[in-house]
Length: 81
Image (tube, rainbow, N blue to C red; front, side, top):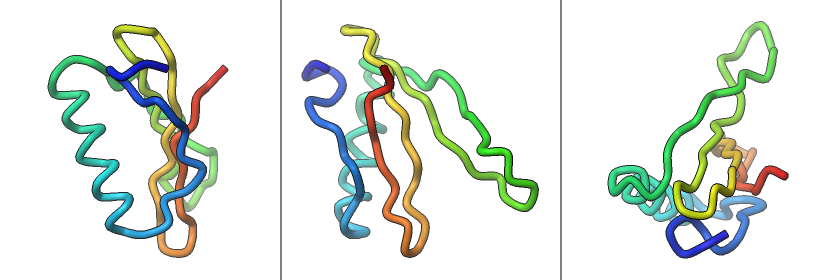
């Protein structure tokens, strides 16, 4: 983890505003080539196009997984190994 990606994990996004602020910060990091979108991993459920987005910091090489919030499910942004 470094200041070019994120210095903490988000186990959930407690409100829509919290999520939108995080999403804007992530978008800025992607746009300034500090991070890159690596892949999308579907969760395998037939009736949903749902899964995790994988991102990588181009400085420290830390990989992150993002699950978007959806109604009562609050999502997350966590380090991968």
